[in-house]
Image 1 (cartoon, rainbow, N blue to C red):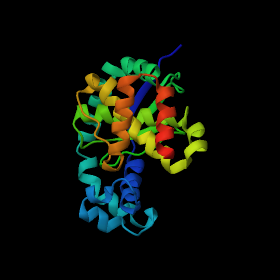
Image 2: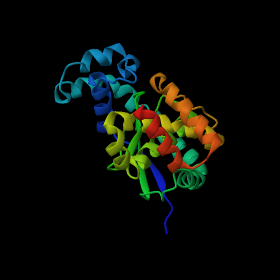
Image 3: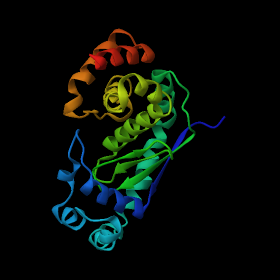
Length: 223
């Protein structure tokens, strides 16, 4: 059976859309609009994508034509290939579920925000991160996607969509406990999840059983 793998690509249209979406998207966790260059924010904020796409592309043209995005994409592919098999082996062991899909697409973005699509499945990784931090981002987003396609529906029935999203995000603290030696970078999470991440970390250190951890986390979030 073929092992799971990650394929790294750059798609200009997806990158432009991500920049536009970041400029117009609100989040209760972290305001990524603060990470967007003011000029790009001015171009995109409050407009439809079709209204600002051309001007946005002009602003990004010099970077797109530099060749550095392609170099980064190739370098990140080579770096990930070194840890691919071990990452998926550990993820399957930690989450107690087979890796549900055999191919994940990682789209390079020239933005800081890195959303994911659990249906495709795909995620984005920032060109402006160093290689080791980018590897950590990959592990982070794939963990989200795996959770969505294995445990999400069951958990959402118990605590609702918002708290399930919080749990999904906070569970990435496990990357620091079980995966950090693969990429030597810390997964810091969001400040809003600090207490939940500490709870998860403490429980995991006492008993490394993901399903038990989920049960305890659900009870914690019900309080």
